[in-house]
Image (cartoon, rainbow, N blue to C red; front, top):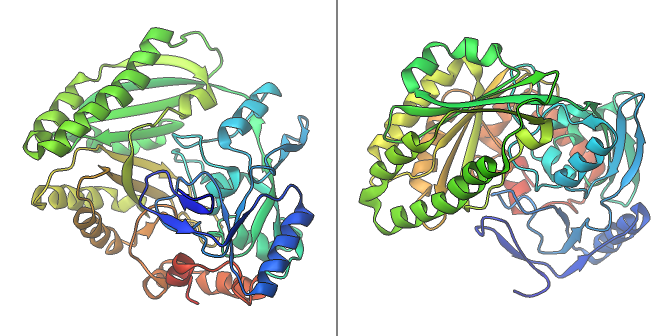
Length: 433
C-alpha cells in the first residue's frame, strides 16, 4: 500500500490521495485548506477508519489528525473538557478517568477519534441518553476558505446544530468541548434469554435499565441481553481469567474460527449460531464505566445500522427475521439492538424522536449486499435513518423527508463550503453536489 493510499478497518473502502497532511495546529489546518482550494483539490479528514461508508475517502488531500490529538483544558468543577479532535476515544477515556470524570455514555468500541465518532452520529445504548454528539458543548472547525469558526449553543448556534453531526461536509474539526460527568461504576448483567420473553417485556427492559441492549443469533430463538446500571461501589470485579476467556478468547479467537468455518461451509452456519447462543453463560460484574461499555472487536465484518422510531422496533425486527429466512446464503453474525433518546441535532439519527437501532453484520468474505439491501427496504418503510458511518444505499432525495432540518443543514453547508472543498462521492450522494 502506498503512503497516500487509505483503507478503512473493514477493508471495503480505499482511496488514493494526491498527498497527505499531518497538521500540528489550527493554523496549519487552515493553510492546508487554503492551499487545496487554490489548487482545486478537495480535503477530507480521516479518523480511525472505522466507518464502513466512504465518508472519509479523499482523492485530493487527506488530513490526518494524529498531531492534533491532545488535551487542551479540563475543569473538574464544571466538568467541561476540551480536546483536540484527533484524540481517540480510548485515550479520552483514560484522560477523563485520571481526573475523576467520564463520558455519560459510550458505544461498544473505543478506537474512533472523537471527531469521527460525533460526525457520524456514533451512539451507545440508553433510553434517556442521546448519541455521543449530544455531549458536545462547543466545537472549533475550519471552513472551506480556511476560516476558523467556533460554535456553541450561544455562538454561531446554527453552525453548532449542524456541525455536531456533520459527516465531514462542513469543515475539518480541530477542537471539541465535552460536558462530562463524575466517574461512575457500572454493574453489568449479561445473560442468554429467549427472544419471545425479551420482546414481551421490552418496554420494561428498555426503560428500567440505564443501558439495555441485546444480540439475536440468527436461526435461533435465543438472544444475549446486556444490562448496565450505575451502582455506588466497584465490589464485583470481573476476574482476569473470566474476562480474557469471554471477551478475548471466546468473543474474538473462537468466534473468528467459527466464522472462517461458516464461510468455508455455509451449511454449517445455523448449527454454529445455535452453539454460540448456548455457549454463552450468565455473568454479573462491576467496573469503571468505560471498561464495561467498551470491549475488543478483532473479528472483521461488514455492517449496516438503522435508527427507527422506537415503537416500530417489533415490526422492524419481524421484517428482519423474514429477510434472514429468505436469503439464499447464511448469516453468521449476531444482530445487535440498542436504543437512544431524542435530540435536536439536525442530521442526528435521533433528531426529534426516541430511537431503536438494529445493526446487522456479516463476516468479511461472505455475501452481504442482498441481506443489507433487503433489510434497508424494511427499515426505510418504517421511517428508518441509516447510520452515516455504516453501509447503506440511500441518497439525498429519499433522505431529505426523514430529516425535518435537512435543508437547514444544506444552507449551513452552502455558507461554510460553497466551493465544496470537503465534498467526495459519499457527501455528493447523501447531500447533493
